[in-house]
Length: 314
Length: 256
Image: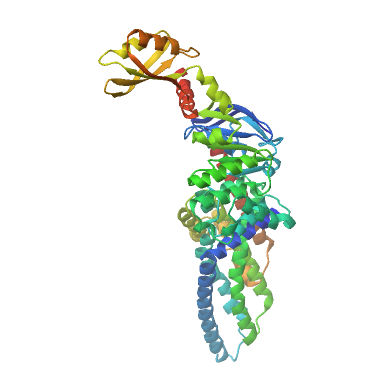
């Protein structure tokens, strides 16, 4: 449904997006994950035809965004970072205008506007001026605008930014529902959002794709390099050095000391399980092994891990 | 065409939802009324002097003495009010980010530009329509010729369209309304006074400067003459400004 090939975008001397390629299948929800300034918005702006790429191409719903922009735009709904609302228009007028420029036939406009308002739960604000909406409602009117013409592809730039927790949940649920009929790309720097809503994740940093995978696989892939949480009761002894000496251990960080009990976070080599060695070392010293468990990496840590690794290569 | 109308409709709605349209139309009407009364008194006195002249009564033409100068005075009002109409068109969309909606909708750049131009033109038309009241008064109490009046309005519409298209172009270059307004005003004024220097120039430069002056072309219209030379000047001015606007919007995409 969406195919991006070797996309590069430069602004003068700075390269915002650098040789990015990925595919999104029909009905899939793809998360675009990266810190601020990673190139998420730029990539989305290229996909929506807002700006042309410097190199490479993008095919959306079967149409090249450069050579057949009108056809591609007809099939794309886009929620920019700031919802593009006209402050002096009422919500209903605004959505009618959007329906009109998106090419919704006159006869269907009224019902489409109502359907979009129902879906995004803004029907009670229909006659309110856009200038007088709260941030949460503005965001939802933006979303209603994006789904107005029932597009094949939805591109949502930080759709949950500025919402309260209840609204965030509602919006995520809505996005999940939209996936299936629609192909969705959403960008975010909030990590739980990706694991909750997306089938696949593209992690992007400094304009380059760092990883593309399912949220589960990304977690699994990094499980190899695990972090252990160990709690040892050993008064005065140099536990840290002893643990550091265990084969396979790469790093030992003391996290907390309470009385004689010290907690450690231990990183090991990728793919190597050091739990047995750790346990036997501690027991052989006669210390009390109070706790030993793997710290499951959250997506957040994976993300940090991946991006820092990428910088290390450069 | 439907897309152009959609944009034009939206533009008009914005003008009338904000005070812009009312301020522009209202204050233009006040100024026009003031010019009208002044010229009416002037016409009245001229007529009395002519009537009591010792060569006997002379017919005074209301078109020549009053209506033609009135049209030329209107261009002063346009100089100040039209920048107010156009300054927000693109600048505001860029500042608030709504331009992203327009540029990612299935519309061509030309359709967007034409829609905005048309919206401005209709508002300007409404502004001119108010002045028809004054003309109606002249018809009620006198018998002016309608032809020079019609050509005068045609000239005003063409000149206003030039100003609007130029203002649209300036607005497409910035995201700051005040900058757009001020630059538009300065450029308008420049086109207005460009031939002041002509008297000190050689015949060729004089001809070129006179041709460039946007008000110079209005004189014939105000006198009741439709000269293709002037129509061509105005239409090419409009087409060129709109073309520049489309290019400016497009280049904005490339620059990001």
